[in-house]
Structures are given as C-alpha cells and as structure tokens.
Image 1 (spheres, rainbow, N blue to C red):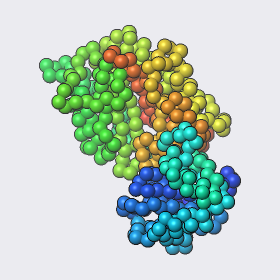
Image 2: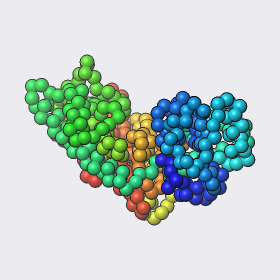
Image 3: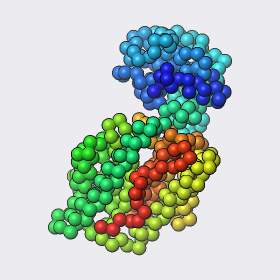
Image 4: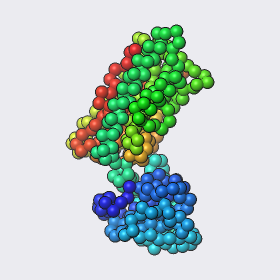
Length: 392
C-alpha cells in the first residue's frame, strides 16, 4: 500500500530507473494493482489517478462526487478534483507533460497480468505530453513483495495444505477397498471441510481428478455426474489455501490407488524431473546474485518435458506469481510460453512451479510446489514436497 512510510523507497527506485513518476489509474476495478496500492474504500465509479513523483508529494486526481473513498489519503499530500473530462485532461497535462511516466502497461501485451491500463487511457496520457514506460519493475518491488510475516503465514498454510493432500490420498485408498468408493466430488468436499476446520480460506474449490479427467488442467468434479475413485486409478489433487489475508499455498500432488502402471510412472517421472530442473536452476543462480528471469526458469522445465517426448502435452506456463493479494498475482510469472516474461526474480517475490503433461483421453500429471526468493537463497514450500509418486 502507498503510504508516507513506503514513499521514500519508491521514490529512490524511480530515480534509479530514470522515471519521473508512477501514474496509477483505475476505473471500476479494471486495474487491481492501482486499487490495491491506493486501498480506496468502497466501489469507485469514476476514473481515478494517483501521481507518485520521484521528488515531492503524491497527487490524487479524484472526481468531485467521490471523495469518501480517499479518506486514507494523507492530508500532507495533494488532491486535485475534477467533474468534467475537460478538467480531467487539463489536470493530467499539468502533472505529466514532458515527463517519463510509468504505468501498468506491457508493450505488445507481452505480460497480460501487468497490462492493466486501457489503450484509450494510454492515448490520453500520451496526448497530455507524457512518455509512457512499463511499471513492471515497480510492481515487482512495491506491490508483489511478501513481508516476513506473510512468508511465515505462507509456510504455515503450506504445511496444512500438504498434510491435507496426503490425508486425502489415504481417504481415497481406504474408500477404494470398501463397497462404496469415494467420488471425485466427495473427496473435493472432504478437503474443503478440512480447510474449514483448520481455519483456512481459498479461492474456488480444489481439483480432484482421476485418469483422463486429470488431462484437463482446470477440471471441476461434478456432483451430478460423479466419478468414483477406484483401484488402478491415477489421482491428481490440486489444492490451495491461506490463512485470513495471508499468502496462498498452492500445491499439486499425484498418486495411484494401487500399483501404478509403467505409463503412469513414466509421465510422473518426466514431470517431476521438469519441476526439479526449474528448482535446480534457481538454487544454482540465486545464491550467486545472478539475474534470473521467469522465462529462463520456464525454459528449464519445458526443455526436460520436450526431451522426454511430452513437450506438446505441456500446454501452460511453468508457474504463476503469488503476491500479497492474489493467488495468481501481478509479479513475475515463470513463463516463456503463454507470455514473454522478462521481469527479474528478485528477493521478496513468490511464485508456483508446476509443470504438467496432459494426455487427452488417457491421463494428466502435474507436480506443483511454491518458491520464494530470499536474499541469497530459494525457499521451496512445502519443505517435504513430493519426490515419488504416492502409491496408496
């Protein structure tokens, strides 16, 4: 959040990047980065801007009829008010004319999670006389960062998520030996109850998928068309949760109910090795202070699956940002496939590592852990992450 305490460090970063200021824009929640940084209260129905200069005090550009949401804006900072578009454009020109301005803009939409400002607004700011550059580096440093308290919260959640996954496999195995095996949907709801009992919250319900269902990365179990989990099945469990307002833990675990087939082991081993190649690259380079970008880590995992013959079946990025507000955050992603992620992985950032192989009509495998870049090291959660296919 933008505060008088965080302002000096942000202004030092602007000066180091030779940027005159950061221009935050939002309209009805279109830019979650701006709304999160400004922490406005209530739903804002008019366009808002906030100018954070590299020297001096920030300036809020607010609509006359919506002053209430700005009550947290420090009194020592400026507030410009407008009602008409003419006044808005004149006010913007007085602030940004002749300046190099950072906004949530990704040239060519290379990184959609960063490309949050509508094209028309970019045109308006350029017409006001500004040069626009991407705020990607600023978003990484001042929006996506985890605090020490948040890291501790994430680690606690990761332990509960991992224990829940292991217990879910045991439950599926126990029921598979009975006359009434558990269904994908029932096991999903069993996990949901465990999270509730542990005091964790989550976005959407977990994925529980067997065999060919797991070949759909975003499969949703059905209550109306249930699929039982039986002996001989390959089971994927993808689950995520956090403490209240904490950092999400997002994991995928794989197991077989009964002895796995050679095909299951082949695909699992390839996916696990791809995940471990991404981890190995981070562990090799981060302690040396070398620059590492999300695209490079994606390549490391993707190269393994391609060499094993499953490159065409790896149909998504290797990982997504996890920031202090969202499970799928706005920081750097582990991606050189869906998008062109060029942002550096710097201390304070967290993300998932989750390569997968999806063989339509047959089976799907994903191996997911989370990573946090600490000064001089990489922290992987959960600490006891999966190395071998679970055999129930």
